[in-house]
Length: 272
Ligand SMILES: NC(=O)c1ccc[n+]([C@@H]2O[C@H](COP(=O)([O-])OP(=O)(O)OC[C@H]3O[C@@H](n4cnc5c(N)ncnc54)[C@H](OP(=O)(O)O)[C@@H]3O)[C@@H](O)[C@H]2O)c1
Image 1: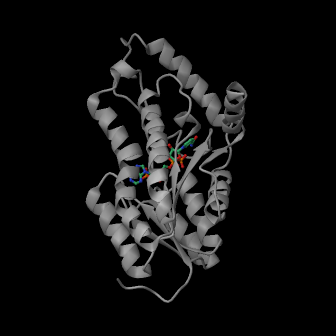
Image 2: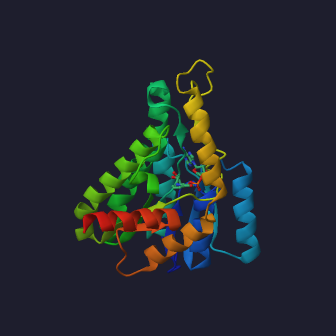
């Protein structure tokens, strides 16, 4: 293992081309982490944008390729980081998107692809990094779930299934890895003003005029459009992630945004 002399902490963030990943990579680099901002497509604008900012601000940040859907891409990239820096202190599993469509009309292929990125992507990264962090006996893994990992909206069933699953998985493995000095942290944003809304993937059947869900879909999309107007900036989420990964004893869960925190408080009231 080749390590550099720098004693900066090392962070890896997936899905850094835009939104929460973009802002989190910059926030970590601005706050002393040597940051690997990973993107599935280096050639697109995201890589140029983040590397231009890093260059202008003289930040310790490299943009490198990582497609969370691909075993080889994940292991090659994580191995490269360890070869270059000798360690990894923080991993942020952020890459994701939402499939939109009535449950019965989503094809199995659309469903599997949604799980491939949002759930198996995070699993793939964790299976490669946990042995590294365990050997170091130190490290933090941040999983970006969602308010939608705790409550559900219509036409988003498969997205919610991936986020609820990531919540349950994280709850379970935190007990396994904590004795090795590894902290698992969940970040649950409400509506965030990122490319997420532009990147919503409509199921192929959702636009079919003969669908029995046609009118319902129109109504729900209108509600999503309104939600997309009432968002927080992705840098607000990055701030909370930074706070969590720099805390000596971070919480397990962080709600971000008024909508997410309000739901949390209501749940607490229900528990009393
Ligand atoms: N925005 C919200 O309201 C909201 C709320 C709660 C939770 N979240 C969660 O926050 C996370 C980030 O979303 P965002 O709001 O920042 O949306 P975004 O701006 O659309 O960013 C999503 C990022 O994920 C990347 N990505 C998608 N598939 C990937 C793959 N196979 N491998 C690597 N990267 C991949 C995208 O890369 P490309 O540019 O290549 O597509 C992009 O960089 C997601 O997990 C999302 O579910 C978002």
